[in-house]
Image (cartoon, rainbow, N blue to C red):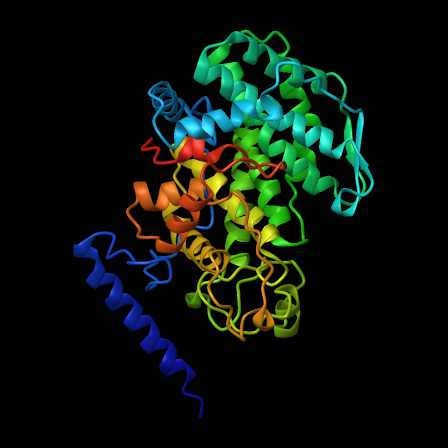
Length: 411
């Protein structure tokens, strides 16, 4: 006779007692280090609602955050002054930049062929960079340059094609709304703003909103783009759809021991057996807190996913529907786990066959600031890597100037 019913009853009773015991003490004790004990909150609802009123500017950086950075830069305080200087010296801040729009952006695997892929991504970063430059200096030439770049693309682009179209759209679509939010809602004088909104709605949103069954960094970046676009368009339906898909994808990208013997999967993705899941996790068979679906592929692609998780959480917080409490343990473990090996920690034999390909990229500032500075988690490895990499620049895809915008930012 099976003892499974009895075991299930005991598990339920233990869980209930633990919940009751935790109630008088609030949120519970936080972990003391990146790889410390898992103290997750209870299961979150499966759905998330868009804010009743969208906040603007409100994609990745909000008004209070920009005010804080402006004051720090004006005072020549560090690390913001060095980060500002780095940004202003980059090609993305050039007032002589000529945008290179394409009607059809064609991107194959690893951007081969590359017909407008680099141009689109870098013009989007340039639009965001010059929008930031205007916000921090007050020099209207930078706002006008940002508008020039956005107008050039909104007048021309009609589609993305080839195998990398969803990812390319996700990268560029994550960055365009950051620029548009600052220009439309802080600068204000933008006659073709509605045409740009039409571009986001008709060209970008349909490509990303349905998600992807590819590697996790694809879908996480695509959901970042969809959520960012939804904020700019004030599209509550698109926001809800993208956030709920995002909340399903995150547990399938970052593992916690509480998930069980195997990582979570995305419902309907067709990976149901142990063999299929292990193959999807690039052959990894030992699972520990913070391991990511692409860790054994390389840290660069893993970093894309981690960055997108932090970006979405940050935007949600600005919008008043804070997702950090749901994501904190997965994000802090992912940051700490990969930061340690990026710093040079010895790779054990059970991890990726004893060898990892590092190159995490400038992706730690947003998550570290939220979890360490705002929420109080000790994150030794992440802090060491973040401080070593400052000022964090750009990965030339969809991450840019996050030491400047988020280092020690209390807002």
